[in-house]
Image 1 (tube, one colour):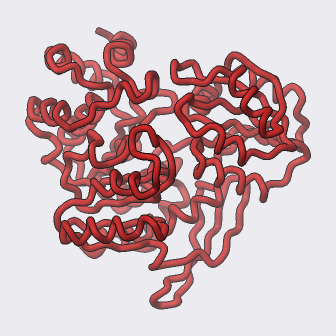
Image 2 (cartoon, rainbow, N blue to C red; image 1 turned 180 degrees about the horizontal axis):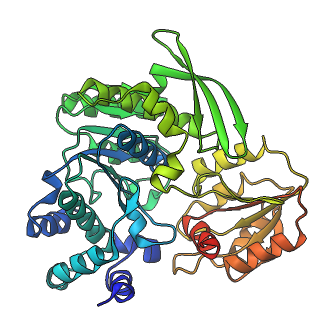
Image 3 (tube, rainbow, N blue to C red; image 1 turned 60 degrees about the horizontal axis):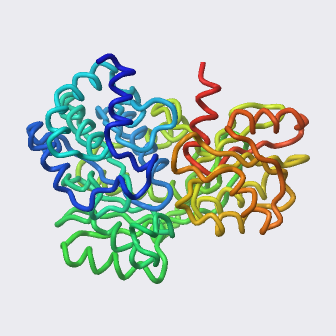
Length: 433
């Protein structure tokens, strides 16, 4: 098989959550363990950091990767889903893995795929672990796919665990209360391994404390260590003044991830760096500051309140659940524009009503869908949106929706593309090159 044939095999042979939803989820770690055992247990051959959370996992993962590789560590990074190219999921020092590696790995495991029928995610996790072992990385940052306790990535014993935050998402799989979701995500806490919690709520803090106590794990709450004093937002840069709550010393950080919500991720990243320093990692504070100014360049991160075009400004954001969209709407409120155009498509299994209830009524909407089976038809989205006084037209694909918005927008307007990772990915694919 060549590379396109290999990708076609992986996408179409294996159950894929992004396409079919919860039917693709395997409820235990058996297949991942079998795959990794057949590969010589690569997950034991490199050090790692494990990151879970409802929102902010991707930004936090990429920010830490940028910092560690800037500090001189050969750094692996496993994230999901990808936006354009499958290989975005598996990187070393910001470089995606080679096409030939994907081909060779897939050929190697096809007999086992036929035997145990793993999911797409189980295969990609094993692929990433095998690549990081092969590349002899100093450390790999591993982003949880969904939940934590039963996620395929949860076979590693990391140097540090991180849970960014807890919100209501994937409730059909993880539970429909914050406490239930927190319990699933707390499943990444390991015996005597330090755990950093980014944001916590009153109803979830005790779950983390109890689990940390059960496993004798030192626990650190980022929001209790530092606070954001002020923000200065520019269209492609965010300046954040942070105060250490123990010393009252303030410091300023410039981020190339410009959404205001990145200030919350910053507090998590800074506490994670502190704990890595405490266990022996050599990471100078000046390196941290420098790396945070160029996370996108160093790691290839895209889709987080990202300016794609100017005149008019075209911005993409992968926020797709209630908490994520609340942050996006808050960002809109501090933006200057004449008129607002929102291109939106969503997956069927999201809390669509809760998201739509947050959206600004004054915007013109372009209802669309990604070309995946999980996508909510644009006509259904328009009907639901009308109940929240959101008005606009329907478009069968993302490209048509964006072109329609551009056709009527003036240079002073703002076009936002959001609602689904896959909507953003399909738009970015049209701008590639």
